[in-house]
Length: 484
Image 1 (cartoon, rainbow, N blue to C red):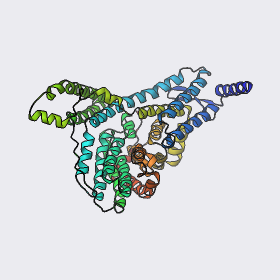
Image 2: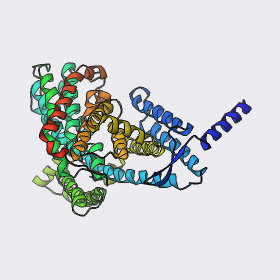
Image 3: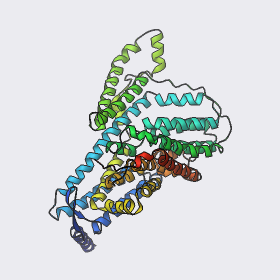
Image 4: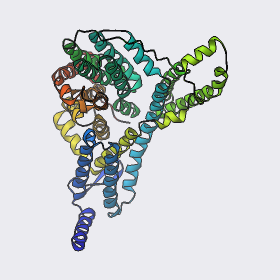
């Protein structure tokens, strides 16, 4: 057994350090082509296995960050080993540092956004909205449209995942006893939240990556508003007639916003303005503006903590208002608690994906894919295919791969791939973070099969949104945009 192990280890070492390869000159200097080598094949295998585990998360209950973290490490170990044995020890280091820098900007940006969302959640902002909708006493069909409209307009600011979870809480609170309504309303929310996130840099990770890359300016994203709206309205209109025309039992539950909640909403909007200003006027990474916004929230947390005892000690109407607005606790708001509640599994997942895809790109696979998709197929066919691919594989690695390929396309084509990557995942429940999250939140009521029944309607909306983009934004398909 030991001899067999030694033989296999020796064989692996030989294949690792003596692959069949050629040298090429790239942006980072002399580079090895490893696509036809053992290392290249092993890297593909490692990535495929890790992503299969990601897609099986609902079955295995293995957090999605774990397999991609392993994959990223293993891929770069193999790549660095090859380069070191060919007298190029720093080539892999330079490439890896470039990927890490891209991740760092995304990480800090998302960490601040998640902290604000958690702060608003802790201040009962979302619960107050939910209780108001439940108390309103609307019928199922009206709630179907209201949750869809709210998801479409909240997701550009609060991101599609958070928005979908909030609207799902409303749907379950009102219609848990009506499985048909819950299923249709959840499908509607997933499509709406993904569509709403597609026309804003803050609405989805893919749009954020495109904006931070400097390809599409902040204001230009909003030309996707009407195509995104059509993407949602087409399937929503079709599904409307299947929603039960009944009246749910209303609730008299009242959930007030805690003290400081409205001011935190204002600070979040100010933080968005700050990030946009850093990017547009100062030509600095928007992440720096978001970190400044974290400073705004930190000082608000300090103010709430210092004034808590004073307000609590007041008498009369102000005390009654205070008791109505906040729970009686020693610490009214702790910013580090909000930071700690960030989606760390998601943040680490992004690290694994960016480094793993970056490793495959450094090996040379993305050049091959780019040549086939954007060379042989053409930009339009390739960008439409990206949407279908994102329904099967998460849109984040797909978009990162496109950005890494860096095909020369017009602004209209970059907007098209932004749109398709953002809304294509709606065709399957597993195609977006919003769909996967809602399958867990409304377990047994919103399912893969239930969503699949309406995939044809969602696909019609997908096709209509692409047509609308070409019709409305035809002037953007002139010229070529080069990635900075």
